[in-house]
Image (cartoon, rainbow, N blue to C red; front, side, top):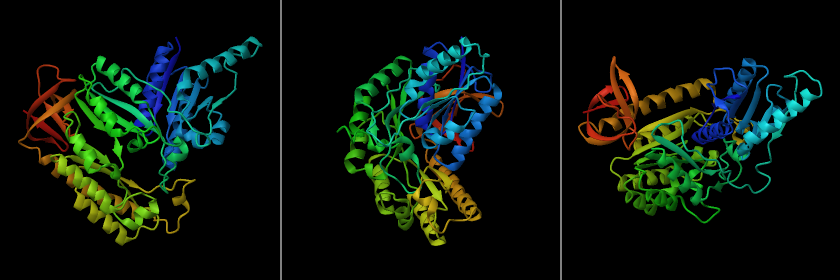
Length: 447
């Protein structure tokens, strides 16, 4: 039995695809081992969202080859999609698999092993085959269909991520992803619902809908994200539906009103912001103003009691003045988020922002980033404090230890982390109780 190890870099969509590839390998008879162990095949699902992500992808590829020079290294995903020529020249890579071709993993491995065996039959030494398989297509040059991958048993024990959409048509000036993932394409509702049913049979109670640009679900098929959610809501064994990152303008009165009628919806919404200054948003080629973004947050708060609203912010975007940064900070305080993911702008070759004038020095980015991280920590603490003394339902996930004492930890619908002492296993159980105090910085105690 051949051994295979996988490593994922990047987003939740990548993570889903990595687990789907692992399931393919298991079904083909491979034994899955940790990436730290010696394997016959290493699969690295790469990321290319920043230049640093490219570098990390290359590092993991070379680390795998160094671990076992005779191993087969498969480099898949966004890095090889955008840097195909570079990947072809990299001697550490044996098989290159682009986006929308990950379903071919097992077939490509069989092809490689067949060629290696033929090489040996010609009298060459075992392990001397140096061929390379390149399974990358021009993802932007033709209409692509949604790549059907599936999972039955994700690595998460209680929460299953489901990829329902791929590609992006937005072309933000700092982002390479439309070139790495291609245009928007949506998974059929029938396929999504089948996967949700399979997951429920394996005990999953919560699903998280993910995509490269989730808000675009159905734009090319006539379907809508709202309709998909409503259909999933009908599946009896699903108790929670959580949404991945949304574009602010998808949050309309109708959207929020209809969601609020669905008791399984988790009031936890990630609305990508990037900047609270209109001038910066325009240079980023974002498709909304700060006012429109705030309107989306206000609508959510109209229909949901104290919803968790989280976001992403880029600091140090080219041309960001002190006044523009101050406008962003003021906007963040006004909206008052549960959590903020703060990123220092990273120049990405091949994007419009990379050649913009007035690039911001790293020292200034560091100061602005630290300031917003501090603000975010303060707002997170204030958000969680709202629930002290309130009864909440928690889906417990796993055992943990705090101050030497055993607990089970899980999350509320708003994604507040909670711990509870228990003499019986609580994993994958929904339990109601009162949140009485902070057990540590970001974990609340339930009694």
